[in-house]
Length: 414
Image 1 (cartoon, rainbow, N blue to C red):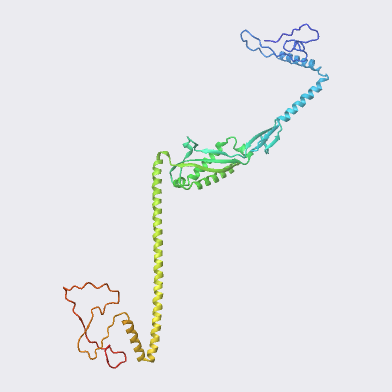
Image 2 (image 1 turned 60 degrees about the vertical axis):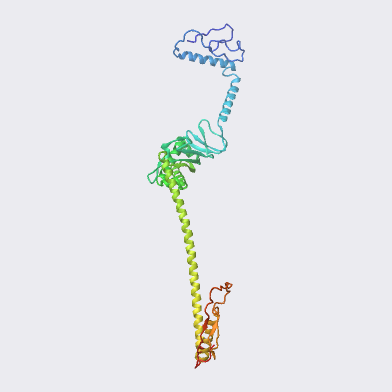
């Protein structure tokens, strides 16, 4: 509805309020501002009236008159003080609005009109409002990205990969990284955030797995796989200028696909059994080979000892023969006699001997039955059986004395 209520309450020296209400200093006193406008109540809503510029000008004029009346007019004594206070308050508010604090684990990046300006370390700083803006980045804490899902939340599109021997492996891993350049991270990575790191990690590990056999991925090749993926990720992020340092790539699980995991487990069990049997065979081989080598070394040593003994014995016999030969060449008869006696001494030393003098004997000589038995402890004699006849006696025949070397005749008997 149009504001046409410009009535006066009849009091001299007072002007109506800007909304047709009583002027200031009425019911509320001289220090109270005019009351807020009232909304019309009751009746159906009407469409808004068209904008009347004259009425807007009249409203502004009424406000100006109210301010002049309150503060003594445009040239009054209170106007400069009020303007100074307002200006000082605005400056204080502006200065305070530019203060900001960077946490110890953060780094601030200041942009001027959207362009990079500077970086700020942890602590209290100030920025030029409204032309400068501050963005804070976590640079000290580790951040992580899980590829292939985490816990029960599996993502087969990320975890299923093709190996170098054309098999499929279900692999999940975690990437831990730290921001080392806040400005590069904000301007080149921060808009996409984790998706960039995730895409780089997935691309790098797929390339490394594509060059690795399935057995190495499932068994003892995980360490090499992690190191190669970390190096490749860092190389790609450095090319992007992402301002990110890859701290660790950790493979959480590496298994065959669920459809064939039981068959792979059976194959792995058979492979482990085969390895255990190979180890047993190697242990047996080592034991047998070592024993054979020891026996061979012992036989060789014995053979060498026997050779040395035989050679030394032969050398001694040859030397002895040479010495005897020298003596025989000088005195043949004496040497023959001595050789004969020494030989008979060796032959008769361990045998029983019976010496019979046949000179003048005419009757046969009877010797006991044990005269030529070995000189050993004989068992006790058995009890004689009178029912049996005694054994026939042994008759010793006369023996002729053997001629000694060098003797011309065969003399008396021994």
